[in-house]
Structures are given as structure tokens and as C-alpha cells.
Image (cartoon, rainbow, N blue to C red):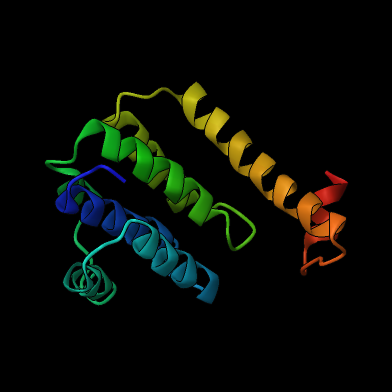
Length: 145
């Protein structure tokens, strides 16, 4: 990722805040956040700073201050996928995603297309697991739709 460390750290912070918006963090969300921090090649000190947000979370708006528009859009994409990990979008998660979208200059139609992409991504992954006969819990339901 070609964004500066500070922008990547802010993306990870946004992920934490969106995942925690519904009042609970499930194991899958925490794993996805950790994987994202690894993929973004965040420095270990930055990772620890992000983890601290779990105990004393700032406002989403304060985290997005100083974020480049590109970083906001990447955060939105990753947060939309992350928020779907537990099987459904909570109202507070959707509100947070919409706040990020507005801040990045996107419209409701863009957010709707992003939700469609997330759904397609889950279907694509489930189809790949079906091809190799390695389904996971929930794949049957995903492939029905």
C-alpha cells in the first residue's frame, strides 16, 4: 500500500470504530482487523495504538480528520467488508459507513454499490470453496441467494 504510515494507521482505526459501532466485537472482526493491519504493513507500535482504541475509542470524525480522501475510500471499502463478517449490518455500522462515505465525497448510490460488491465477494469466496469441496459454515446460505 503506497499510503504513508499515518494514513494506514487511521484506516485501521476506522476499521476498529466501525466494527465496534454495534457495541460488540466478534472474534471474526478482530481477526479481520489484525489481518488488515498485517496487509497494510503497519509498524508494531502503530498496531498497539490501534488496539488501544478498544478500551477508549475516539469519535469517528476525529479519526478521519487529516485523512486523505483516498485513505477514506479504502477505509470505507474495508470497513464495509468487515462489518459484514458477522452476517449482517447493524444500523450503527451502516450509519458509520455512511459518515465515511459522505466524508469521502461519495453518494448513497456509491455505498449501495459497495454493499453489492461485499455480497458478491462473499458469494465468490463461497463458490471457490465449493469448487474444491472445502465449504465453511454459512456457505450454503450464501450460495442460495
